[in-house]
Image (cartoon, rainbow, N blue to C red; front, side, top):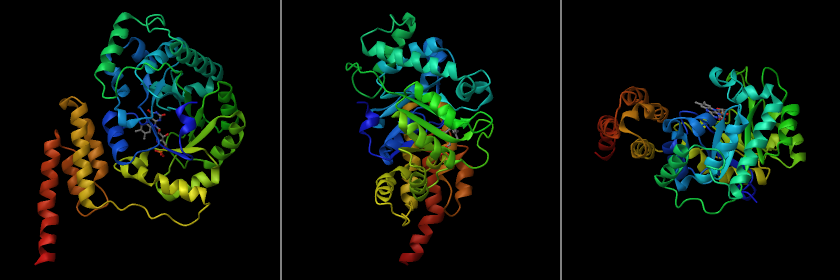
Amino acid sequence: MSFWQHLPRPVIGLAPMDGVTDIAFRHVVATHGRPDVVFTEFTNVHDICQGRQMGWEPLRFTGCQRPVVAQLYGKHPDLFYQAAHVVSELGFDGLDINMGCPSKNVASSGSGAGLIRMPELALEIMAATKRGLHDWANGQTLAEAGLKPAIVERVARFHAAQEHGSPQTDRRALPLSVKTRLGYDSVIIKEWSTCLAQGQPEVISIHGRTLQQLYRGEADWEAIAEAAAQIRQHGVLVFGNGDIGSLNESVARIQASGVDGILIGRAALGNPWIFQGKALIREAVRKHCRQSIPEKRVPLEERFDMILTHARTFERFHDPARFPRMRKHLGWYCSGFPHAAALRAGMVKTNHAQDVERLLEAYVAQHVAPEVEALTA
Ligand SMILES: Cc1cc2nc3c(=O)[nH]c(=O)nc-3n(C[C@H](O)[C@H](O)[C@H](O)COP(=O)(O)O)c2cc1C
């Protein structure tokens, strides 16, 4: 049985987000919110099998993030076959295929959501990936799978540099999952998910929009519910995704759609705490409860601690020159409290965790300390 079968239901997971769910963010979310499962940013199978090491950045993870699923995209079944070996060797818990990315670079070349228009290729890719996962589990080496010596060496080096324990010795075939959208330019999720079910993934995650919608309009949870009812007959788990902004919305969506789990994306930006409510979500769903769950109000001190922890975690895992990629996270934390906009404006200019620390200290000196003094005077 794969880890998916052992997770509590409904499953509450962190959705994959390119440029966001990097090793540092996943680490922070795992240590402060503990979602049931996390996904990496999507990674190109070509970069894995033939590209530069830079393209492997999304594949870094720490042990506390488990279960962690590597999400891949591409359009060549043979590369998925090889990449499945690499993902297995790196010690991931699962492999997810992206069939939902709407970005022009990805979808117009036939990868990501482009696969919705090529169901035969999608099934071929799933079959090749499964073959790769099983061949690896049966003892096939990376070289035997056709990977070049430089890539084989890189896997060993990459693995040794990670903080998630010893190399994979337990050769079990990883479970396959797919993340997709409702359709390309119209909602065809019933036909499309029935097609995907033929590839026998363990999970299909559905973002309730078509490719053409990008992120416009509202996610269509009725379409997700209809697909869930249908796919369940094939023994595949269904996760719903799209526009879940709070614990109460999570409960309402799960109750109304009957999905086996949800993936939360944008609501976790600047809010890794959201996953702390997963037990409350499960309890409300189990008890068919209609009462509202109190949403966590994060005290300013805890928020500031998190900002600094995240910045330092980023520095621990990344080259200092990449700190500007951290700035958007800093901005996301800075809202919903007095003078947040001014602090945000400062955060987007930071280059080190030390800059962040100075800004937070200045905020406290200017806005918090005088208030405390006034109260105690
Ligand atoms: C910045 C950003 C990057 C994303 N990158 C990915 C990705 O790499 N793979 C993927 O399957 N979906 C990706 N998505 C889509 C999300 O996983 C999710 O389906 C979408 O944001 C809807 O969920 P939400 O409303 O909870 O955010 C991305 C979304 C955003 C906002």
